[in-house]
Image (tube, rainbow, N blue to C red; front, side):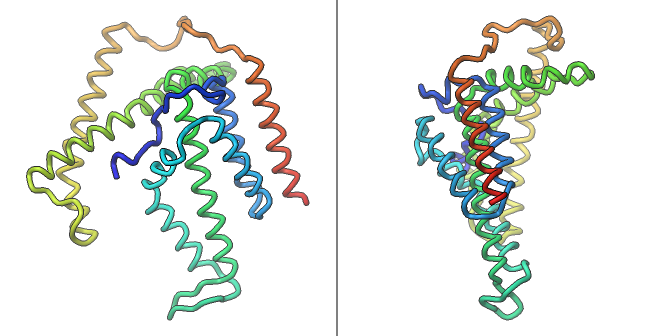
Length: 265
């Protein structure tokens, strides 16, 4: 299960999506997420599906790699679906003792499941196609107007970059600790929920210690290199919009306009 977590990891491949400006991908992800909340109807979600599938095909990321990342949210997905399925009032279709499935609950649960899956896939696609350095530069450049009101844009971008870099490192560290504890006789699979929760203590304690140690080493390394924020710093590869970026913005505008118009129909 630990190896199935792909969120925050970069998938290196040569594609048009990978070569786009990171600001375009940030805006595109935001537009796609907003579009999922425009309406709870079939037509908008059909358009979102076509758009997402087209972007995935262009990005050249294998479908099995994306599906593998969804395994980590199955528990959250099931909770969301079951709550909407059984707790939504409306026309009753099936009744199990005190539980009931309504027509409205079935419809809402279906849309909620699709929305959650699309949110994960859409946001993961940004990290699959963008390196942490590019993501940091794009976020800092895109939010640069906020510097006028004294918002620490560079520091926020740096924290996000470090957090994204730590995800695959901590996943690998968790896998190593889990294998070491299993070799010592630890059991993370059998037993009830409470027993499984207690069995995670030998895993979480060394993981937190390792994470704090890495954070301390990183802080000392940054201080040793005289890092004092983004004031006066230049970029090795300044971000410049190209023709493909302008085309991508046009496609995003057309997509969002189409999604908005379907709500009015």
